[in-house]
Amino acid sequence: MSSSVEVATFYSQTEALIAAEYLRANGLVATVMGDDAGGAFSGLTLSKGFRIYVPQADKHVAIELLETPPSEITDQTMGEPADLSSPDAPGINQVEY
Image (cartoon, rainbow, N blue to C red; front, side, top):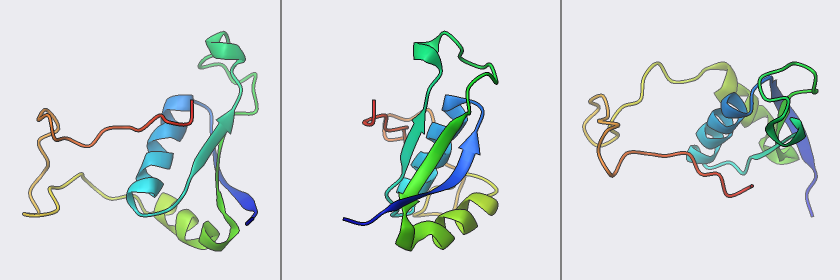
């Protein structure tokens, strides 16, 4: 079993989920861990934030991806801005919860 390492910390769960989904879209395994008391402290900085973990072997790739996010979401087939209102638009996968 490979060990996981922390690559980023976010104050909000939403930001952490978006970043983790971005890593997954680039072929990495990413896990979000954090505690906001079941939503009671949502948005407050009382917790230690939401951390993203990846396998040790993917650490450098994950950090590079998070430090240089894409400038816009594009349709990969045509290079055009994606229509996020279509039913085929990419979504956030929350299978960890």
